[in-house]
View 1: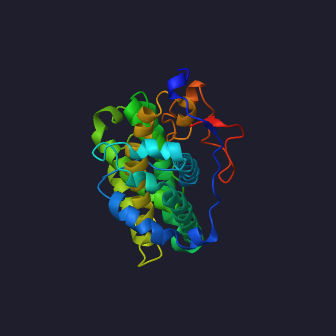
View 2 (view 1 turned 90 degrees about the horizontal axis):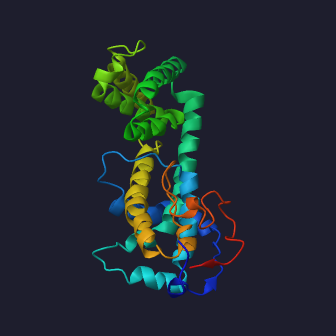
View 3 (view 1 turned 60 degrees about the vertical axis):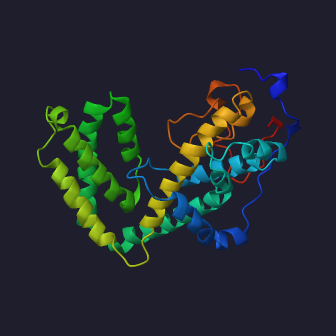
Amino acid sequence: MPETAASILPLVQVTIAPITDAERAGAMTALAPILDRYGAGEDRVPRTDLASASGIFLRADAHARLPDVRERWRALPAAEFDVGCLDALRPLAVGCREVRAAVSSFDAQLTAAKVPLALATEATAHKQRVMRYVDYQLSGNPALAREIADIRSGTGYLDLESDLRRLAVLVRSQEAVLAQDRFFAPDDAAACTRLADALAAELATDAAAPSDWLTRVQTAVYRCYHLEVMPTAAWLFRKTPSALAYYPSVYRGGPRSRAASGDAPDLADAPLDADIPTEPITA
């Protein structure tokens, strides 16, 4: 949709402030109250690419800090929009990186020493085998296809445990369809649960495992950005598609506002610490 004269604000240059050492050092402290407020209450949320989400939040935060833009956000009724979600964007951006680093480090240590090779091999092979017939039989259903794609994207042992549990639920709920596949085995769902429990026992540590942080961050991303900021931006900037490019989906295959339509540049994959955009945008 073309931008009308009434909807155009002065052209501005949006620059992302680099993440400071102080922000990195205090990331988890700053993140804690956000997770207390937004990081619970959902039974299951889509898996988030934390690196990509961090970049998206930095850009959205930089745009939302523009004085005229901030005024538009804060003019929204509190009953319609939780402005705390806007204030959470930068701490979430920094926190996503720190949690991602912690998960990667923890998973690397597990790879080296924690999870027995036989268990890792069996669990991985079982996931792959079940995924093949689940994908073949169920991918025609859009809702199930998204769930399957999200399960497929998992990496590392923390994801593997979660993926097996999700597969167990999927196989049980769709057994009437899946049982027709020649690769289906009646005990596949039970095996998924058994292997997930075995992985959980190996992953259990008092303080080292970041899985709780990971789950809560993914929930906060879903509740704070996906359910609040992104849909509100879609309405607030519906007549200024260049501004909408700063509020894309954090999920693979999700909507990227109007950026995907060609009305505005898609900024979701730009370098995380780059100043963007290269040309002024309409805020």
